[in-house]
Length: 261
Image 1: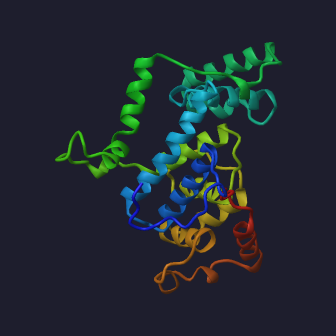
Image 2: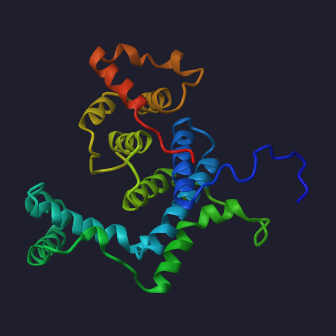
């Protein structure tokens, strides 16, 4: 292969598998999102990560088009059985939603040996194809120009928040770690009212709820990537928090990052 610029990495020294590639792409997409890079670039990287996670889930018998919803119901039912939640907390799901949880509670109670983490989920091929065609519409537009060189994409169809959130969900279903960038993203989405269910870190949620959306983005840059030149001039985050809170944020920044290999 002819190269205009020769690759300087020695062959046989660095290898990457599919899961590690997805983790690195997702971490990069989250940083790009908080740096407010071009949303087309964010979408391309985040979608590449989501597609890798999705293919890995499929290889384990967990079709993402169905798995998230089914697992969510079973997880909720298991939490009710374990005393983490009460059925009353699912009234917001409506009468049918509450009944579904109650039915699953009874089912799991009668079958205590069922491991919900090991369930396999699939569905009609036609639905799966339609699901992924719609999900990857913007991503495929940005990847190829052979079929529609004169085509256009409505940028309103790009939802990077949702793509990144789904990628994080799939990563967790594949037993990947909840890294600081994933946790911060979920918490930021909750604090900015994009998500309803709060993540697991109440301290981080409390901090982010004290901030505006612009301040949350700035805080993410400061603690997950690097500050922009305009951050220090627009937002004085140091004046908002006491020493204990600042130490918490410092520890967040120092948590282990995803492996690079």
